[in-house]
Structure formats: C-alpha cells, structure tokens
Amino acid sequence: MTKRLQVLFDETEYAALQAAATSRGMTMAEWVRQALAAARREASTADVDRKLAAIRAAVRHAGPTGPIERVIGETERGYATGPGPGNDTAASSGGY
Image (tube, rainbow, N blue to C red; front, side):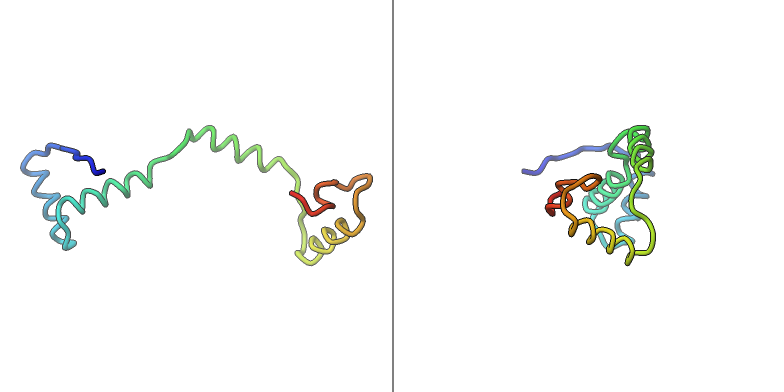
C-alpha cells in the first residue's frame, strides 16, 4: 500500500525542485522519492557513541596475525591436535 506525503514549498523553492527533476528527465515525484531515499541512506542508523564503543571493544581483542600461510598452518595444526590444554573444543570439532 502506498502513502501520500504532502510537503509545501514556496514558489521559488518549487521552481528550483522542478528544474532539478526536469534536468534529470524525471517527474517531480520521482526526483523527490530518490532524494529522500538518498537522505535516508546517509542518515546514521544508530548512536555514534555506541558505534565507537563497539569498535573500541573489538580492537581490544587479540587475533592471529602474520603471513596467511603461517596463520593457516597454525589453524590446521590446531584442528589436527584435537581438544586439549589450550585448544578450544568447539574450534577443534569444526564448530563455531
């Protein structure tokens, strides 16, 4: 179901919007829909402080680093040794 949105502009603003739509070969309605969709995509979807806190928490975790060949080798050796001291049972069984 579609909904109607009524927005009022003075004559100068309306003429400028109409010119923008016409220059792109669009109807005024389609130009406005696309402009609002673009504005919605650019708007933040969450609190900036919450996003930064999540990023800061993530970078505190240590992870494997180094040449990919070494990291893959260490991972494969870990799967081969199975559960034990220092080996994660879920990772050793192929689970995540």
